[in-house]
Image (tube, rainbow, N blue to C red; front, side, top):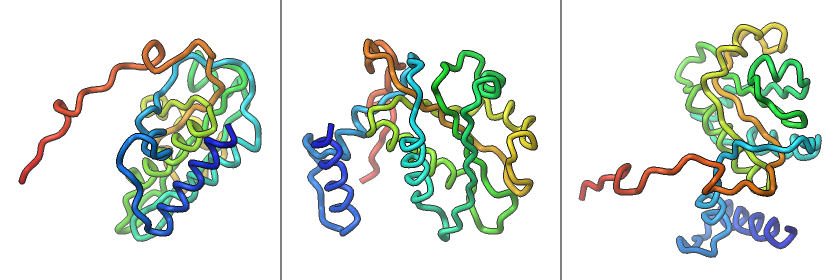
Length: 189
């Protein structure tokens, strides 16, 4: 695990310094992105505060239009509150609500919050945790905005569920199939 983490950190350092990375297998960043999936089966082994902190730090470092950083993160660990949002939540999981700043001129809070969510998804996956991004249950969060202490100038956009995965889960049995490149890409040359 330490070797994998070290390789990922080295790759991110190379990215940050502007050096080119290989676009073939063996690149830890692209390998992680190509192997990531959203599990449905979680264990009740709790996510640690240190893991949550690292995931949040990665969300905070996401790019945003004009560097506005129009997001606010709400971490929910209370099982009863989580069950009101996702009824089949597994104890030990965490929900992070990503809210965007309302009516910020020239900003793109929904898009920017999506970038922050993706950063958190990749961070959780790189730590060996399972992560699922949700959009629809955000309606339940909006109705509980005051109870969840989400600042008035922010509106929930999406959320991410993080937890430890069942060891028997894999991308074939635990995730929906992906569309092919031919179904999703066209080139104009």
